[in-house]
Image (tube, rainbow, N blue to C red):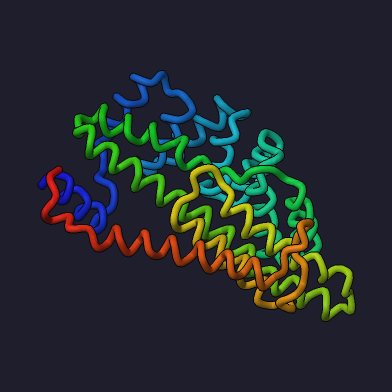
Length: 274
């Protein structure tokens, strides 16, 4: 029954709180390294621990990304994002977050520049799984069981992935505004790359290392939305694959993922042993 109780508690109440003493014990036992400071800050909601991580491990992209996402001031978040771009320049998440900030300021030129730059970037990485081991260690150090600690780590990892995936989805949604902005200013050449950018965002989300169900589905939906705007026979890659053929592939992948989710929901958990 223990696992079922833990899953129910997570779904209803989220992660259990740790005391300051438990947090400090975890930090001390791990020499206050970069990962444990990030995890400690997340679990205690203490921004000072994250600021300590930035001060001590400023060249660590995971630290800078966390500050870019959770810094308490716009200046703090922007400085961290600039540093994140410097230390993980091939990660397209840098460009997506920077472009989202530019969109929110109404700076379409900067947003467009960042998104065009993202076309040449590498593999998307939000470090959700990197931090999961640290979250597990924090709960183990606090006296929780190994099974509970693993479940808490998976839950926290999923929450972080949901945060970053949501921001990437917001960037994709802004592409329509960007296209309309260029068309309004009679700049057809400026509007044209928005299709390639949208397809690329969707594909990069799907091609993450060990993508979650959520990020896979979001990536499929973003790419499909762009493809549905094209003539079905439009070639969309170097292999000459048409928009129609790619949509068919994506629909198959989406159906497979949804089928897996449904099977998981239908599992007779109440009859399973721990």
